[in-house]
Image 1: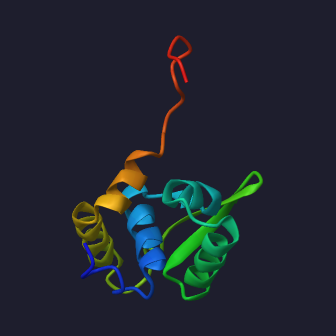
Image 2: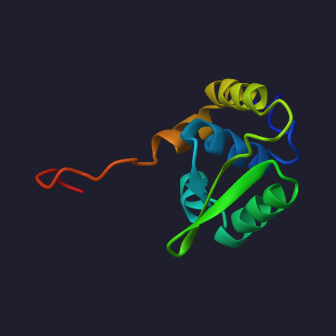
Length: 110
């Protein structure tokens, strides 16, 4: 999928937004790991998205968790568009699926 990847700037920036919309909340290192991108690059993009008020962040221990800013104009519709674009982008969809949201059961192998 190439059409929507530059809609929000660069393909990486668009994929970061897609993942945050799909996951509802994440942090830069988790996004970088899922997208197999440089930590510093992703952290810089996330910081700029916060400065633009597209994302809002909250400290959580040593991490800064981010989500789409609910006060951003048309935030709900933008979130829906991002999830729609994620469904059409196989690489981003696989990245989202790679993120575990709950602990692994004790008896399961790594």
